[in-house]
Image (cartoon, rainbow, N blue to C red; front, side, top):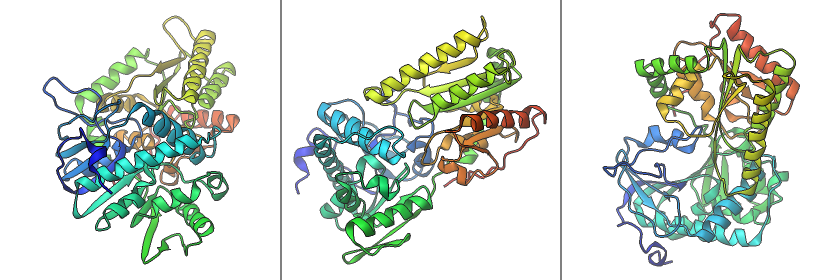
Length: 455
């Protein structure tokens, strides 16, 4: 298949022995006056996991730069080449907002919201996956390695194997992989499985996800499959759990910087010097349990278990997928609830909830971690959640309490955290109170073991 027609307007091809393929490029949308780009480090995002591995490794990152139209030429970032893939308005609507985030995303997160199935979206998903596969084929050196990321691009491994059988291909799914009874709802389930099986190695966050995948391959494609290996024609595809993590040393060093520590002290002053600070940092997403968390906190205040003057909740909710209807509705509901709680329980100069929707740079985020007596990470379902690991690494004084959903992948590793069921409001309220007491009554001596090791 010719790659030329789809790559018109793209930057000059430079081949690389390692190619990362992801939906988005890991850079800020805006560049500095000198033309320099910086890594985009969103809370709990894919870049947080890959950045420590790639910043000193010669590689090419293939992805969409944002916006529509011709693909822009972008400078390298820390030696990593940025190779852009163009998307038009139809691609953005039907592939990204449609099949990827209105069909696959809710299905892979236990159908927290009802998945939507539209035939036109599947056509766009195929088309965009083909474009990414062709871009990766064009920049990979002979015999090189291509590492494909996440649910947006599940067809790319199979397409890439057809285009470039000489390559070593890996695929990693950052989100949960659903149990068979959910995945079987997909009209194009066989095609998605075959696409993933184009890889030589398929990685998941948890062993249960690898087990689910093997079960589905055996049932849908009738291939010999175990939780470690799958036979495909004359090949063997290896599968397994490889939970992502963070550069704990980097986060600990950042949190220990004098300017970051000073910023943390100023933030606590800005918050009114409360006795207790609870922090949550999420993308605005219905899988993150934000509404349930706000409801539990509201009931704690109403019941007299928490006093606004003594305790504040800082909720960071960075907007995402704002063109998707479900996310617009969610943001409206969250903001109404924050307004209701502040209106009912807050005082002049003393809001019950400090609600922030802008993204923070790494230093500011580390300062927020340093302020938080309790870190509440309570998603309804999450592949891993690196915010939990960042908080643990940032507490260089070995104080603080982590309230963590048992449905986050990180719960399997952070066994010292307070694990809660975010669907159980009474249990969630008890978890907030219990984790708070561990900090408040022990004068900050409760310790979390640093189990979040770097990849």
